[in-house]
Image (tube, rainbow over all chains, first blue to last red; front, top):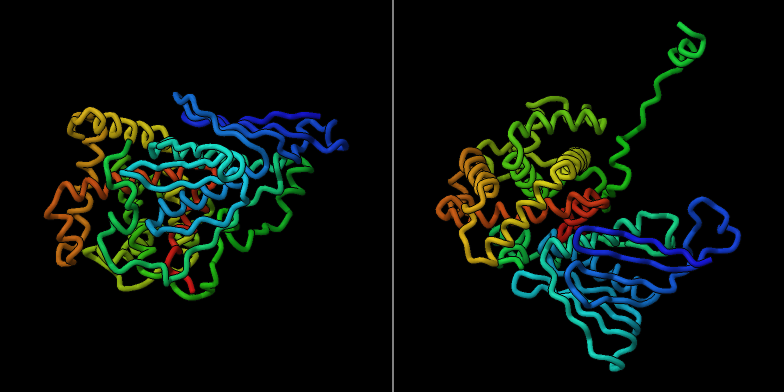
Length: 171
Length: 209
């Protein structure tokens, strides 16, 4: 059975379509165990990001790590990702540049979307809601550990140490 | 009294060994060691931002400690004040460090209060974004200007100008506004489904190992 689940925020809509395992299909809210297609829409933008299991895994890892980087002000090296549907997020002039490489590298031009902080937060929140939903993709894990003290920067003003990305004019 | 009520009242009260809200907040190997001072500083500044958003912030913080089952850790206003004075920038810096449970309690209180203020935080950040796009000064928006005024006023009255970094902020209202906005952006991330866990993890970035 095909199931469709939606995580809707003011600026971001994450839609997961997938299959339930047969024995779960009769339940009130069956388990969506296997992702077939995932779409990520941002309000007011035509570009839709989409893919399968690799896409949602990479999007989750990139958005989650970047959110932590934003909160602590310490850059994180992004987790190694599968070759397919790579996703990266980088700070760019007070905004947040999401770069998605559809398919395998070289198959298509990478897609870049510049996000304001509120859009970034809504993406992270949609992903956190998905991760908290035990009936949808239970294998999707958010595993983050704090950075080692060797990553700490020398003393500097808190506005720089705490949230460098928030300092430039936001979009 | 009905039979069922009598049975209920005869049951011994079993309190959980730790507040439920702590369950997802790891100790990251710190064990019984105190938290680094940067954690007390960051928590106090985020609480200062909440006070600037909401008149009577301390009362709301104390009420939230009750709601979250934390009164053993934050018993009253004086204890709350002492915990916040672990911020080394404070006039009345206590020269002590937060225990892990004290830090957990402050993080839980602030993220749950931030969640209640979600609409206001989003409104202020959206207004800031629009004003900047139009090249207009931030005090064109009454509610945003009020937040920045309140934050600057709280910061001035509570932080120690003999600390070099505090003095630098006090000399520059623009820098202080930037600090207030940076904290407001961070509060936005505290409002989410995993806001408490995300804040908690971020506090330990660069502090473990």
